[in-house]
Image (cartoon, rainbow, N blue to C red; front, side, top):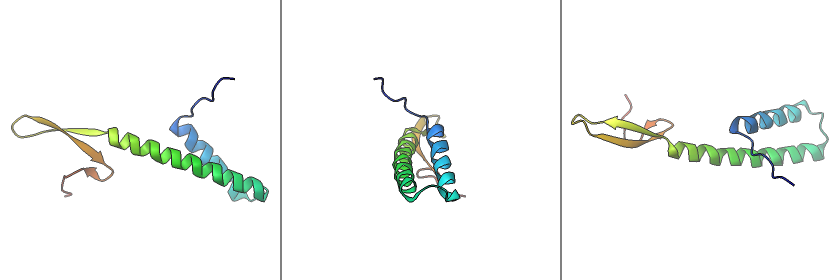
Length: 85
């Protein structure tokens, strides 16, 4: 039996959104709602790990006044160590 194809981040997000929609409608039996919630939480945790990994891989190349270039990690708020204006 071949392994399951890993869904892309976007496909996982679409599935979670679909689950949320079904649960919000209130038409699922309680047991199915609980299973969907558990599955959705597992997917969200995996997606969070994937986002954390992607964020860690991102860097910004900066050029100093003397022409040397350095790589600095990118954060959600900007470059680490960079003052906000």
